[in-house]
Length: 540
Image 1 (cartoon, rainbow, N blue to C red):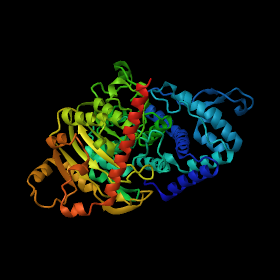
Image 2: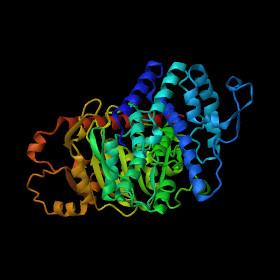
Image 3: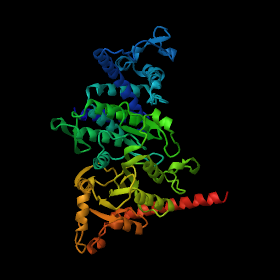
Image 4: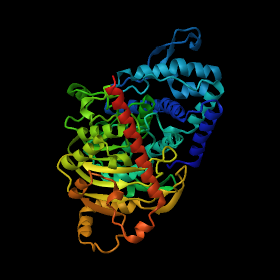
């Protein structure tokens, strides 16, 4: 069942009730909704587990069996100190309570009940959670609207689409410069990197788990029979989906328990990511609350978390831009020169986190590709000399509106070996109007053809070598060899190596020039900060 207009309207109503009721923060609102979705769904999950245990003749204890000691005496029934745990089924309390009584029961009992339930899990989705929607009328309206969504009757894709509609309301960047990556960009990057069933997939800055969800959907589509593939309209574009009917039982188990891994530094993002994965049918994927730039994990901790010992096969990430980490807190493994810039430190961390031969696709601000600080040059030197940079995809400026206007590219690389040549891909259009919101579908889209060029890069390299160097090069892709990169301080900016005719030079797109100027300005600001920090340190 696709996401219906009525379901979208219900989510929009919830948003309006929350904003009008004095809850203006879309991140907190999304987090609160994820709790309510969770409370709603647990009842059905418990019933499914009971039925499965009955069929398999295995023991099962329902979450709703036994008694619960009341935390707030006002929630007691008939003066009793205990309530039957069955009272914590959504179908019981959500339909029976309203107003002050609803707020009191959810705040003092429901959150405590599910928090206690999660204590035995590797990751407690409810740890530190509390009810923020404490206005009685607003909570009553929101609970009724969530109940009306009938989440138990929707398939995983529909529930996931519904939650994505919630997440789309988040339109501001976080404190570290992190923001929600457009889903069509994520899907295209995943398609290009092509993660396979049996490989491990990791996002060390997972946010709301967009990359992990897309990788899961990509694998399911690759293992679907033609009759199990359908098209759904998402954000104004058709998207192919597969049920994964050709996956074997061991493959399904591996996808659910031993394929996807992630971290985030923000507890709210960890909860949103966990809910996003749960709604997609991946409730056992644990997103850790962790800053990988300031903490390390020993072999014992990695084994406890069932992390792959040799590193990950695939890393997909959009790490925070423009953030800074206190120099004294940066762990030795991720240091690159004296840099405290998160985008450089994350890139170094991801190189180390890959297994030999593992591959990554990482969104980076343009300054990473041509920055002239020692740390910038050293990181690019390591990438080119000690690893294999396969491609750089230059994304259109404004692709991350309304969160950020920063110019970005996607860096595709493999761990180990060395770089012989790099394929540069330049996108002027990504299928959406380049305005302040960047959410209106348009026909112009360079990404499908560029993804095809990446898939056929060996053949394209032969085509490039055989070109007439005196003729104008019309395509949006080109190559540069390692010697050329080395002669240019390992600059990895696509525009540096673009073959230019006289007409192209004369009519250079002013938007491209502005993007490049903005990236240079950002890099200069970073260098000034580095100098300021160095001077402060030397004066101590």
